[in-house]
Image (cartoon, rainbow, N blue to C red; front, side, top):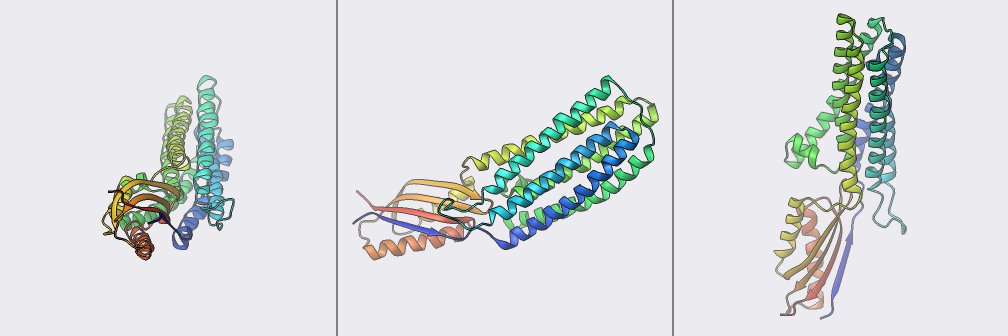
Length: 320
């Protein structure tokens, strides 16, 4: 019996998930853009290091959301001969670029300017505009965070996981990044408010400058976490252990399979997995049976792991 290779493909984009991600990203983009302008104005009016650090934070978030929005559009492009597996990994590339921008905003401006203010304090005053802007930012960022959390919670429930585990394991960078960014933004608002309040109460500008440094360090930590996750998925990550186990179990349990020699998986996008398997077949299978077996395994794999989009089966007869 000659070796048989079966290839099955499915369109990658899933409109429902992409529409939800687009909505979350657009809300975050608009909110961050408006807040960035307000924070910058308040920072220039008051001379507060923490407010200027928060302005840099919001500007970085706005640019990041623009990157993510671009990635959503590019990832839905149809496969081409030059990109036969589609453009799903565009999501990870642009997320990595967004993380680099966030890191630079934290390291180059928030931390750098905060240290400069610690070494050479400058005069500041007029705290009311800063408090007003922080209050408005808290409402806007809170609304964006609640939407991102609701979407993430719904996805976690659908996957049968807790929200923390889902955020850790999810291959969708958009909602994950918005949720982490908005969480960092809320924490940054609290830190900036505390720095301003302590500066006003004590008269020591070190509190304000220290808040700027703390905001910058927080941005750098979040950026490194996102960059590490994006890099892992971009350079050729495999399916998660439970997915691989389900794939292997599905193939092995088919009555026509004698043994799996090799099983390879590759992440092609947030909801796209490639499966390549080389296995031995039972000797009593006819050519038609081999074709039917491949089609059956293909369908069973998609039922077992819905993210499977590309299946390559190299089926050869057993040698004893």
